[in-house]
Length: 606
Ligand code: GTP
Ligand code: MG
Image (cartoon, rainbow, N blue to C red; front, side):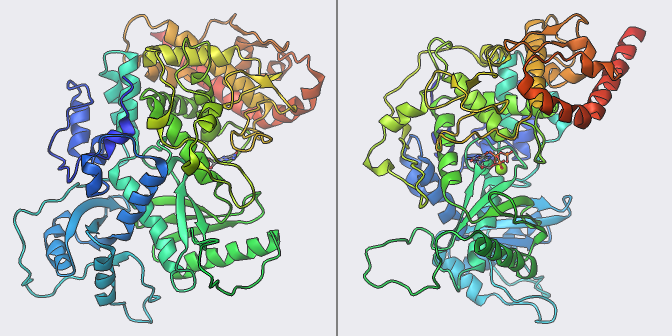
C-alpha cells in the first residue's frame, strides 16, 4: 500500500511503450487500453531519467529529480518535422553528432504540427549539433540559437543510412485526455476508490509533457547564455510537485546567477551594484525579460507583463511546446514549496489520487477557477487535503506534520532563501521516521475529507500543516491556511466569505452524494459528485454553521432578491463583505438556479 509511486516512475531504463503496461490498472477498462496505445498515461512516464537510476529501487528526492530532468533537457533538442514518420530520417541525421538515447513524438497547434524530442547521451553532442545548424535569412527571422529547431526537407533522396530497428519511444505523447474519455473510463470502474485512482492515472502529467516543460525552461536559459551563462530557470508548482495534470501551466523562477552564489573562488565577477531590493528596478528587469521573450524567442507568444503584482510575473504561451508559462524572478520559496508538496505526495500513494479528485471536483462545481479571484486556488485546495490527512481524527493520521519533517532534517537538508525564509526540512522520505498504519481506502478518505471540512470551524480556526491541531486564526480572513514555510502568512487571504460558504455547501452536497449511492446510474460515484451543481437536493436542507451563519439550501437557488436576505449573518465583522459579494454573485447564483430548475423540470417530465 505504501509503495513509493514516484520512485517507481523513474526505474525502467529505455522502457518501450509496448511493454509491461499492466501493473497498475484495471485490465477491464478498454478505454484505458486506448490511452495506453496513445501513450498518454502515467505508464509512459516510466522511462529512466538516467542510466544510473535503473538499478535503484527507491525514492528520488525532489532536487535529484530536478537535476536529472534539467540534465535530460540540456541533452535534448526539440525539432519540428513533417510527420511522426520523420523520426527515422532525423534519427540518422542526429546520429552523425552523437548517440541518440530517445526520440519522442507529439503534436501541437490542433495536431497540425509535428515535433520530435531528440535526447542525446551527452550535452556536448547537442552543442555539436547546434554549432552545425543554420539560421534562416536575417530578413526572415531573428537568428537566435536555442534548443528549438526544424528539420529541412533534404530535396534529394536522403543518403543517410536508416536503421530499421529504431523505434519511436512515444508517439503522440502530449494529448490532453478528452473529458468524455475520462468520464467513460470512470463509469466503467468497479467502485469509487478505483475511480479515484483511475482519474489520477489518466490525467496526471506524463513523460512527454514533463520533458516539454523542462525544455521550455531550458529555452529561457539558452536565451540568456551570453550574459548569464549560469542562469537557471527552475520549474516549480504543479509541473514538478507531483500534483500536475496534463495541460497544467508551467511556473518558472529565473535565477540569473543560478546556484553559483558565494562560491569558494577568490575571483568574483564585477557587477552593477543593486542596493538591496528595489521594486522598480526588478520590474524593469522583468520588462526587459518580457521583451526578450516577445521579440527574440521562437514560439513565445501572448506575452503579458504583470508587473504590479506582489510577485511580478511575465505570462506567455510557448506554442512550440504547447505550454502556458508564468515566469518570475523572485526567491526560491516556490521551488521549496514544490519540494515540500512533492515530499507529502510521495509519502503515501493515496495522497496524489485524492488531491487530483478533490481538485477536479472543486473545478467542476465552480469552487476553483484558473483566473485569479476571490476563490480558493488549486494550491490552497492541495494544502487543505494535506492538512486533513495529518489529522489525528484519521486514526492514525496518514501524513506526518511539517514539524516532523523539520525535526527529521539532516545537515544536507538545510536551506535558507536569500531573503531569510527557512526552508529546512527532510527531503528524503527513506529517512523519515514515520509510518502510518491507516489502511482506509480512497473512497473512505474522500468522504472523511468532505465531512471534516464541512464541520470545520473556519470562523475561529486556521488550517495549519505545521502541527496536527487546528490553531486559532490570527486575523479575520474568512479562510486562513498557514503558509508552512512563512508561518506569518495566509496562503488563502484572497478567499471571500461567500466562496468559503460555497465550499462548505459543496462539501455537504458531496457528502450527501457519496453517502446516498444506491444504484449505479450512468454518472455514479465521483462523476455524480462532479455534477453536484446540477442536482436537486431536499428543499429543507440546511447548512449549519458553528459561527451562527445559517443558509437555507433551497433558498440559495431562489431567483429573487429575497434569496440574499435568507442568508442570516450574525457576525457583524463580515456584514461589509457580504454586501460586496451580493453584487458580485447575484448573477452567478441566478445561473446556478436556472440550471437546477432546468434539470428539475427534465426529471419531473421523466
Ligand atoms: P496549477 O493550478 O495546476 O497551476 O497548480 P499550482 O500548484 O502550480 O498553482 P499555481 O500555478 O497557482 O502556483 C504555483 C506555485 O506557487 C504553487 O505550487 C505554490 O508553490 C506557489 N504558490 C501559489 N500560490 C501561493 C500563495 O498564495 N502563497 C505562497 N507562498 N505560494 C504560493
Ligand atoms: Mg501552476
